Length: 155
Image (cartoon, rainbow, N blue to C red; front, side):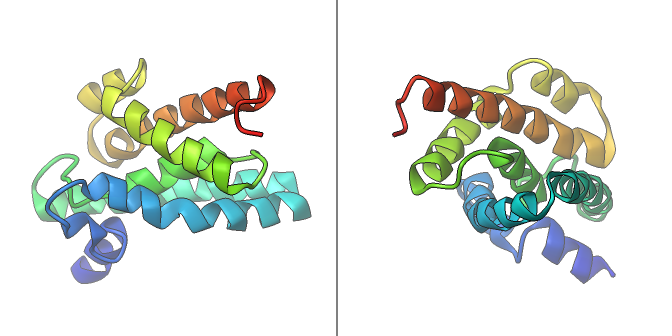
């Protein structure tokens, strides 16, 4: 079980890359933009349910990985970046410009950790503390990309 948890938490061991592992985890999530778009086209409700399940599953996996690694929010855990990137792109129009804008904005906000992401990162223990700060940064990224789309900057 330990090997499977660490494999999933590190997104096929991308988290073990010694530099910018979170960036590699976010890159691995880009194809999920198209997957969630297909889900949304089938049913927006199903898309939300799958996203919530992804976040809940990521919290559970990250919690177990925290215990195995004996380190809170280890750089080896990058499943949180996957959940955050999905939050950054959920319900946005699927284009490469949107995908890349969401990627870069998410990476910046994941580092900056705007409120309440920083608070969650510093004060929430276990898997939820690992994942939910990234989801908050992803939601902010989503809103920022929507603003860029609205003013025509990504057309």
